[in-house]
Image (cartoon, rainbow, N blue to C red; front, side):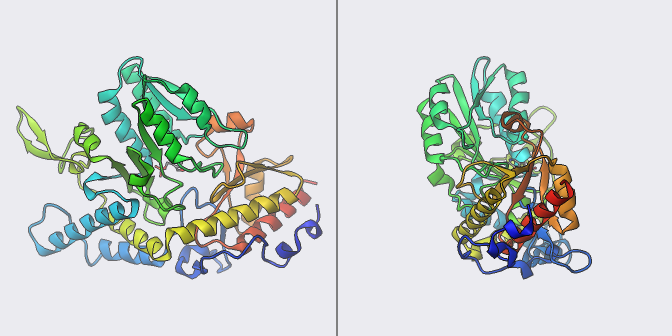
Length: 420
Ligand SMILES: Cc1ncc(COP(=O)(O)O)c(C=O)c1O
């Protein structure tokens, strides 16, 4: 297909589909240029988000002039660092509608889900108990449950998807029984962008006495999240997808559930009193945070939350949903592209170009300064279901605009010419 078959707006460097409501923030993100100063069309925010200067500055200050340990020092710098660290926890709590005592800092969403599996799961799951996952889950929300199923004798059930790529809650309703102790679903799919009907998922889980864990990795950077309104029992996400640093994430859990969970890692900071005869543990969240925490990273996460909160999560959501809708529409105009996932998915668009492996597409796009993800996206069961080894995935962040979509479409046209 020639460039002439692209929509006129695309050829002009912009794409139709409505004016995005968020002002252009590219200048806040120093990572969005190539080594030779050209614009970098970064469409891999689903993997990890670029960082705004405000987050970089906050981490540099925390690592430099303000640096000291937390919770232990008797000197002023450490006391101030402790306040800043705990302030970051309060910011997280406010941001997701929870209480600060319910916010456990982890290394990321993966560790947050493993924590639930290894503490709540090992304590509460018995042989024959069941855990319901879905076909679209990230490996981080599959493998921890397989490990705990081996340890406890619990059984994993897999909820199918609707034809357009949502978790099929009609099927979930049929599958769920009182043997189910936990339902663990992604709020937003990292491959399809599909958004879970969380209210119904919570109703269905609670109706059989199961708890609901939401993997909020792809949701928290894209939707306003209120764990109380979601009526979930656990919520997990990673800072680095929310424009914050790597190495820190969050497990939120209902206070009474957290209070009943045993620790999973032992060490400093998680104890009340240690003797060789008997050790008692600190209350949550400290009980789950053994060792010196990720101090700088927590402060960086707090700065990221300040940054996105100032822009407004509703504006971010509208912006990314509009870009994703525009990209889907433009991809469908190229009749050699298969687009996966529902039409109203947010921020993430997976597709396949006929006769071209996604890795080849990704490599050619890289030459055009366009970065997409090509692969199985840590969702191999979903790839098997789609009948492909891999997909190409463009995922948006708050800094993307129509010029990124236009660059992607130009790169796809070039790839098609190369592959004849
Ligand atoms: C839906 C989903 N869940 C879990 C994860 C794991 O996140 P992390 O690797 O930051 O722990 C990811 C990351 O891609 C994800 O997209």
